[in-house]
Amino acid sequence: MATFFIFEADFVDSLRCIPMQVRYNLDTCGIKLKLADWNQINSDERQTLVDMACTNEKEVQAFREYLQNLILQRTGKAPSELPIEQYPDWLNTDKIPEEIQKKASEFSVRITQQQWRDLSPLQRFALIKLSRSGHENKNFPQALKEFNLISSSA
Image 1 (cartoon, rainbow, N blue to C red):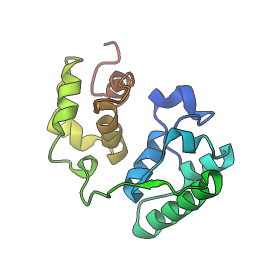
Image 2 (cartoon, rainbow, N blue to C red; image 1 turned 180 degrees about the vertical axis):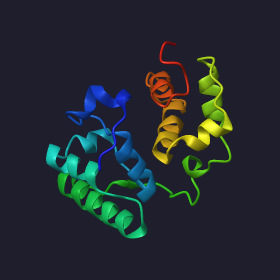
Image 3 (cartoon, helix red, strand yellow; image 1 turned 60 degrees about the horizontal axis):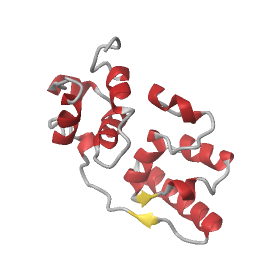
């Protein structure tokens, strides 16, 4: 089942950008997908990537193979690979990454350990991605609100 965040609302209908759910699956299966490559695949194929589960070893392998073949067919080149983290930060409920606290502090927010634990892995993943330097961070405060880490009136 597809999970989209409210902060993604401006592009999920068209899937013109890669949604967090697919980005999560990309990191899980170790594939780097460029937006230019995403734009080479049609809307049905994008929707298939959104709908594909990627939670166990068999699903991860199926997602990886489907995407590799798809990108190879559309671009003539295999997608780049990423190292797969054995225990990524978004699965670690015991430690809030420093980059997230630093970014949150820009909005006068301090995320507590309990709040971090209460987030889903996909929510933690989104915060990690949105807090990275070099990433367009305009959705970070929206994510804080959506995940109830900041007052929606702020």
